[in-house]
Length: 470
Image 1 (tube, rainbow, N blue to C red):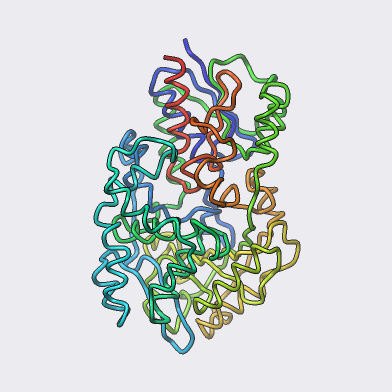
Image 2: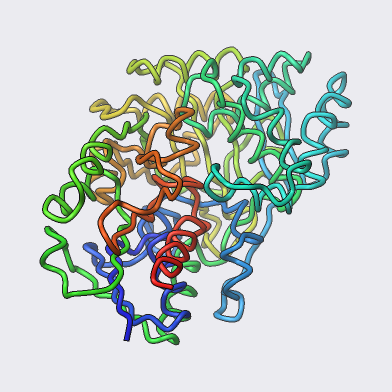
């Protein structure tokens, strides 16, 4: 019987394991931590009964991807929930902007930029099913829907700063800035419009849903299905050297490229090891888990109904903060991505207390304490927030890496999203998953299509392995 070993049980590792097991392969997953899931774990980080997502909290590409269509996780108990407002961006003075599932309704709230928002995101959202199928795979492929893909293609290559000039109002420019900041890059970088455009269109087509019961519910459903196909997961199983693994026809590595190079020192070709060690990691995240009495009192009231709140002020402030971080400097007012998953999934809170998850963009390997900078940003747009916060649990970039070694230096998106790495991954080959060593594949968020708990990268890597086996 064909056998496979998967190193790492993050969303992509589990997706790879499930894909192989469903094809009749005997699969064993090795996970160093005591709990599976990698960046898709959930836990009571602040107080008992308050459920926080440890990293990924919203999943715009998870409900209709090639992996989601291949495996019915809903049959294993996975349920999705949507906030009324997908994301919001408060501004000073109680102003702001927000996005809902409808392009038209969102655009109407942007005043003079009504038609511009429709013209920019409407055509992409309209054909997003086929567009997403094209870009959620290696870029070097023959597109099945080239005209649909062109709708994204004419928007994605531009720097985010150039796209911002399409809009005239401060509200629309700020709303765009919050989307673009998800790329963790300076807004002057080519292709920095790609992630923002995809996320904005996804919000209008699929929304930004949360998994009921926490992102760990995605992991639990995947594990149940994997076990039904005979796959198994060994927790607390640290792999130091690929030669120590039992012989297998396929080895899948759900790891950062540098870790793959280290544990594959005597297995991977020298050129691959060099490429993996040269792989650039990007800025880091500084996390705060908050327990808040009654939710945050945003002055911009639609933010109270939003699943995600981008806390960074104007476009100019957001662009300045991202530019500083990309240069290795800590901004006084960082960009803060704030998750209010309880808005869509109220069962995550208890007795009037709700969990809030904050992720501030900070320089790679940042060793300072960003707690006060984050809280100042929140208090700025939600006066009185500090009085409602009853517990604060910080995680520095070093803490993040210790908790999940794949997040090198606190880089939670597994790699700098420069044009080359975004398109091709760490090894510039037609098959970005193959390592050059027979039967060994990289399937982490470092390879296309990149970060996000949708499992597509792992699924595609497993399909590549199966094709090579014939």
